[in-house]
Image 1 (cartoon, rainbow, N blue to C red):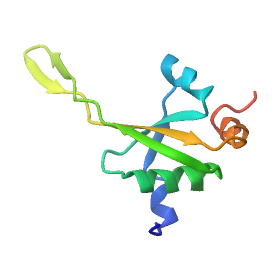
Image 2: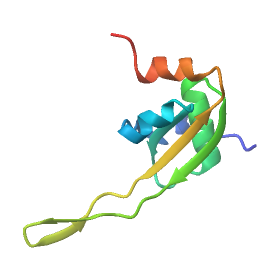
Image 3: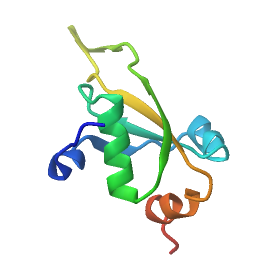
Image 4: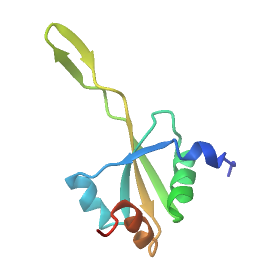
Amino acid sequence: MPSFDPRDLADLVRRPIVTEKATILMEQNKYTFEVIPKASKPEIKAAIEDLFQVKVVKVNTIQPPRKKRRVGKFIGYKPQYKRAIVTVAPGDEDKIRQVLFPEV
């Protein structure tokens, strides 16, 4: 596996995605993140393992098509993004949940 600079890995993951579907996937140890569009699966795996100190089993990525938006007579597009669904090894789900959803 190629080595990645740990200083660059933190910039790959933008934010966790918390939707109804993503919440259902959390029961199966799958967590959804928005990542930069140029990120590859090995880079995403290394970034998640470095940020949360968990073992990543699998990474699935989705790059949905851009949606058209209109403001008055001007037509534009929403920004492009990439979604990564990361499967975490059993037993590591407590580590990642403590970081994503801290107790108040």
